[in-house]
Length: 170
Image (cartoon, rainbow, N blue to C red; front, side, top):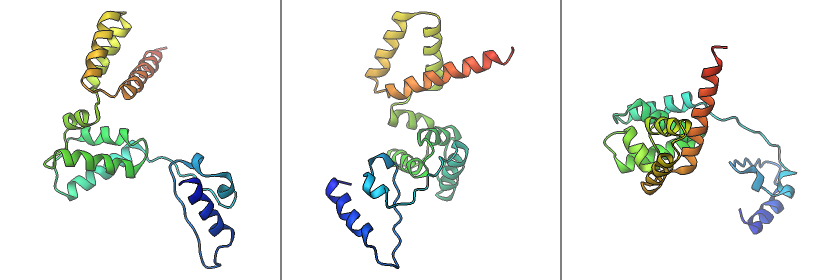
């Protein structure tokens, strides 16, 4: 909301009718001005698991009789970062691109994602110190429209998983 809109809301919150209850929901609580927050009871909801989001996306796809790859539904679930509304919005974007089916290849193309295989290959090049090859590969990914922020996060996840896996034997 704009500052003017928050001030208008504040006037309503200061003297609400007795029978009225306001329920406000936001994904950006830090943007709500302190004077409004001071007149609210706040409830923080936890994120929905990737498993639950994937399950719901597959239910929607089954109900709509749209064929899908489970890996595509899982990738959308990961991208939603715990938000069911975001997951359904991402699914809708994919189906507007290809209404006949949901494929991992389409998800990667639409959102500029790199495949797990590409990410692991890049990680191995980094690990082996092949700097010029890494730079060339990154340039190519960037030119192809890859989401570099997501790529960096995925590479960190690979590093984390590698550390956890290598520590299991100790």
